[in-house]
Length: 191
Image (cartoon, rainbow, N blue to C red; front, side, top):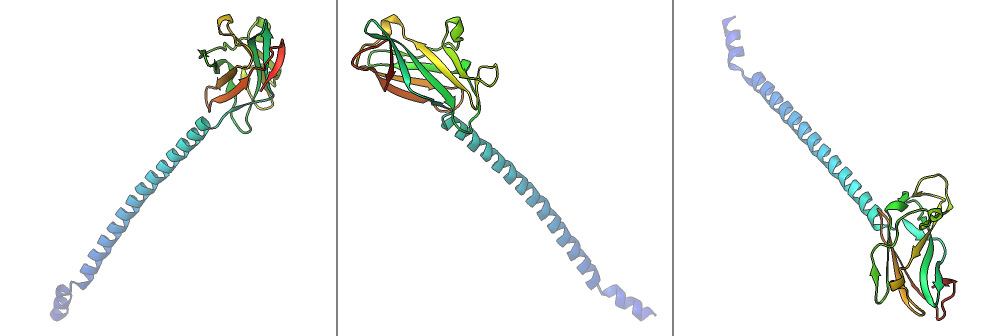
């Protein structure tokens, strides 16, 4: 019986196999935790990248477009005002008309803000052509006509190029260039 006990005491093969299995399991667990952390960081980064791309697309695409011609209002041989009809582009978010900035430029004049967003009925510059609700957001299926009054000292005569810039709160600037005709009429389309 003594000789059998010595056989088992000197044989460490089973113990070394158990140690190797524990070390292997520890490496697998550490690798799994590390890969989980790396995948989580990757998913977070890809989500942030997606948000950046969507924000960039919203800022780069124009959210409004012209719905018709620019109409000029004339008196005494000078252009005294402009009217334009706007709508949102397909698939874009609503645009707050009150936060929209309109500027115009000629060869001699640059006026950076000629729009105050007040209602046409109040002597202002906004007239809703089609409106689905009673807010000042230009939304799908809506059209708004904007009237831009030109100050007396900034009025232009015939054959003058005018550039209008409509700057919505988000999205690209809508730039429209028109030229007054050779004869200024009370109401005329500008091209």
